[in-house]
Image (cartoon, rainbow, N blue to C red; front, side, top):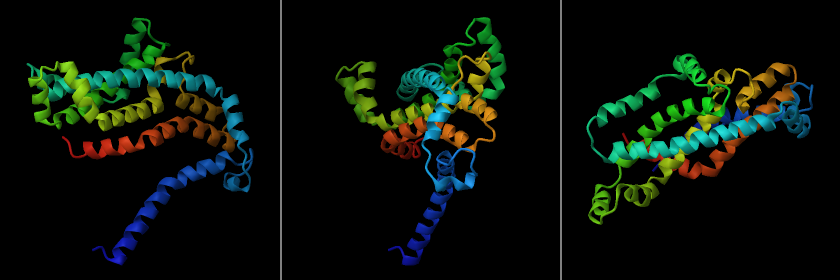
Length: 271
């Protein structure tokens, strides 16, 4: 049994790390609800939810949020489908060059976007895609598919071999085996992939900045940076805008956290 002193120490450690994680969030929320023009430390003196309305209107976040949502839907949908299909092929099939091709996919995880964004911009400009949603979405789809293929391959490789053999003996096609047998079992892994891809896409800053030089397609994080430059001294508005930009990620995570945590725990014991 765990000694009482050891249990107390565990609770103290958990409380300490929880305070470190929640402290900055509480500070931002207190600033967001503080009177405009007041000190950051006076955030709890009064609640001013109107700061969120002012930040939303002054920063024109309705347009930028719509752009972010559109890009996120495109990237998450495309990368999830492609990752599942590629992960299924690499995880359950053997074909010539599969190992080499899989390592090529892994290069997408290793190469940072900062190293390729400039030549990528000129390539997309040459085909007339800059200042479009596709210029922002396609590079992020490629990056997400690289990780997603690795993630789903590990999930499918851990599936029961007997289950796959039974499906083959019953005459199930490859697509029937994937969608009717493997995907229901791999649902936590798929949800985890969707949440991670959404978080990365929503928080992406460099690619929207470079691929839309005229500023017509600013995403929410990019708009927040410009909003900060215009309201340097207005702490309450800046904090309210930051909360608005971060809120969709928090909502998605809270809604899918059970499957997300399960998928992360299962993925931690896979190759």
